[in-house]
Amino acid sequence: MILHLNKNIPTDILQKTVVELDARFFCKDEYIVLITSSAVKAVPDALAPYTLQSWVFDNDIQLSSIKYRPERNIVETPHCSIGKPDTMVMIAGPCAVESYEQMDACCRYLRAAGVDTLRAGCFKPRTSPYTFQGLGAEGLDILVTMREKYGMTIVTEARDASNVDLVIDKADIVQIGTKSMTDYALLDACGSCSKPILLKRSYGATLREFLQCAEFIMSRGNERVILCERGIRTFENSTRFTLDLCGVAWLKHHSSLPILVDPSHAMGIAYGIPDLARAATAMGVDGLLIETHPDPATARSDARQQLDPDAFTNMAQSLKTIAAAIGKKLL
Ligand code: PEP
Ligand code: MN
Image 1 (cartoon, rainbow, N blue to C red):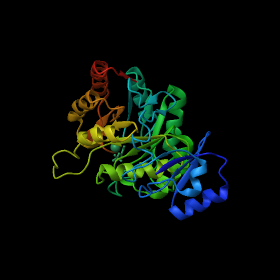
Image 2: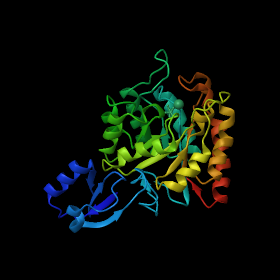
Image 3: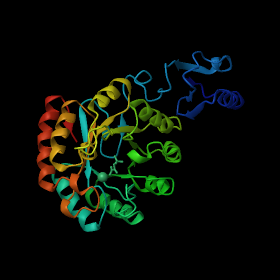
Image 4: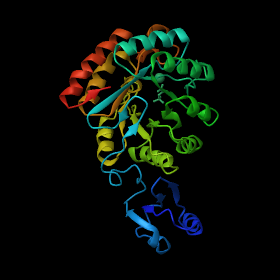
C-alpha cells in the first residue's frame, strides 16, 4: 500500500508504523510517502488522521506501477525529459572509455548526428578477469572533459559499492548494469541520491524481479528511474542474448517508468543492431542505448557489437523518419 501522509504526522507515530509494518518512507515537498507491503489492504488506524491519499496493490510493484502514476513518470535529464509521449532519446557511445582521443573522435560524430547524451563505461563488469576492466576514475575524468568540451550529458555505470559514490558525483545519469541489478548496496546508494538512474534488466530476471529492483531505488526516495531492456538469456545462442520486446510492451502497460531498449548487448553483433533499433523505435520506446566506436576493430570491450561511425550515422538518420511516423521526435 502507498500512503501520502500529511507532514504534520508526529515522528513517533510514523516511526512505530515503519517498524511494525516493515514499511519505508521518504519526504517530498508537500507530503510524506509511506510504502508498506501489498499485503496491507487498509489504512492503519494510527495513520488515518494523517492520510491524504492511499493506493492498494495486488503485489509489491507499487511506486513503479502505472496504477500509482497513470500520467507516467517523466525523468528530467540535463538535455531532455525522458518518458514524454512525443520524444525519444538516443543515448550512445562506446562500450568503454579507452582514451581521450577515442572519446574525442566519438563525440565529434555523435554531435554531428545530433546526439546529446553520451554513454561509456569506466568501471566495467567483465565476464573474464583477464580482459580490459575499464579506466576507472581516469575514465570518469575523460567523460567530464567531454561534457565540458561538447556539452554532452554523460551516462556511466556504477559497478559496485566501491565506485558508486564517485560515479554519482561525476555522472549526469548513473547506470546500473545487468550483472548488478540485484546489488542491494548499489540500489540503496542510487536510491539515496538525486541523480537519474538507468537500471538495466538482469539477463536472468523476470519482468517482475526487474521492477522489484526499481522499487528498491524508488522506495529510498529517488523516483528518477529509467528502465532498460538489454536482452535476456534464452536457449538461443546464435545471437548474444534475446531482445525481449514482449517484455517492453508489458513494462509499458504495467509501469509508469520510462523504458529504453539496448539492442547492442542483446544482438552482440553489429549487423543486426540498426534493424532492432528501428523495431524498438516503431513500438514507441522512450529511448535507445547504442554502442558505437570510432574504430570498432580496436575496441577493448564488446568489439563485435560496436557500430562504426557510418553505420551509426545512417541508423540515426533512418530512426528519425520512423519516430516521426509515430509522433515522436528523436533527441
Ligand atoms: C554496458 O552497457 O556496457 C554493459 C556492460 O551492459 P550490460 O550491463 O547490459 O551487459
Ligand atoms: Mn558493452
